[in-house]
Image 1: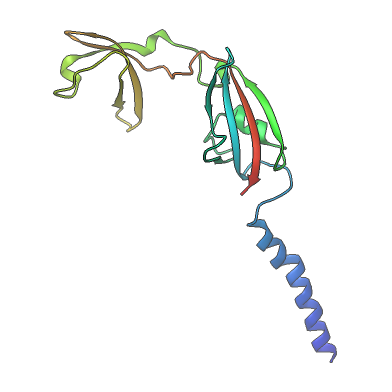
Image 2 (image 1 turned 180 degrees about the horizontal axis):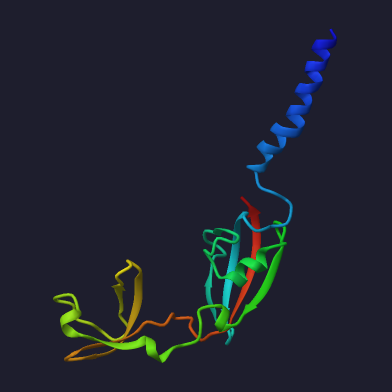
Length: 171
């Protein structure tokens, strides 16, 4: 009888202390977000002039792991400490976002380097792959009979950004 009761007590402790918290950990958390957490957020990116550049509101939320470098560091840091349902607005200077606009990232590409049959137009986006396999997005600024002039700056280079962020859940 004592062994049976002791087994019941030990079983209850195992369920309460080990199994229940483990099972609940997969169901999200009501505690504050911390580094290493996978989070789901809605965000709105607003430019200096007040223009909404991009938003996830009304579409699929953004999911990322805090500290993984998947999003801007200042964006990640703003989410730390938030609890599900909380929101924050964070201003990120250009240097901490996509960097300053750089004139050295504007360069010419000769016609013989372009894909055969391609008829470039100003405003086109073309892609270039470096020797390490990284793919760059370039915008065509000018077209001449010798080739094209492209801009490799990010569309957000040189801009201070404001993000409105709502933590939906800790996944």
